[in-house]
Length: 151
Ligand code: 4NP
Image (cartoon, rainbow, N blue to C red; front, side):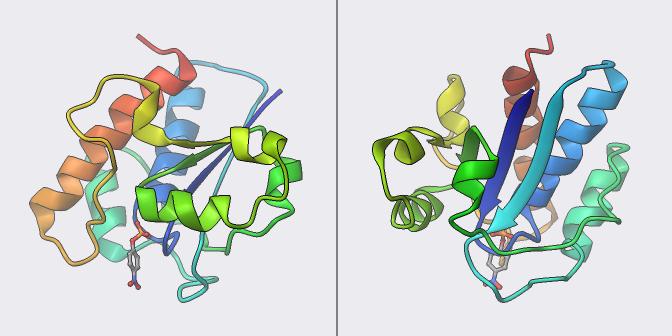
């Protein structure tokens, strides 16, 4: 069983999008034995649904995020998950700061480090416009296909 966690700052834009895209791809490709979740390093949006703009953009691509709810990352996630993908360098630092050993550190990677992408980080779209949300969707979608081994 692969256990994958996506992490961003608020858990309302980028990481729930990654979770929803992966759940969509898992269903579409009949994949088994993959557990997906997402969390935010901050607590500002705990229990909130994803950002309305993220939900609307994902819906255009047939990805439904409406049932997801934000939660905060915590140290027990290092035990529950084998692969922890963070969206940007700031998330990376925040998560690494909570590790207590090398095994935990090795689980944490920048999502866009898994292949050659035009960006190193998934940019934070929170203060951006519709194009920024679309850009995030395209980056996260491509990375998700690579992660799940889908052509
Ligand atoms: P996310 O985006 O980390 O992709 O969920 C953000 C959401 C909320 C805030 C910043 C980024 N915020 O400052 O509230």
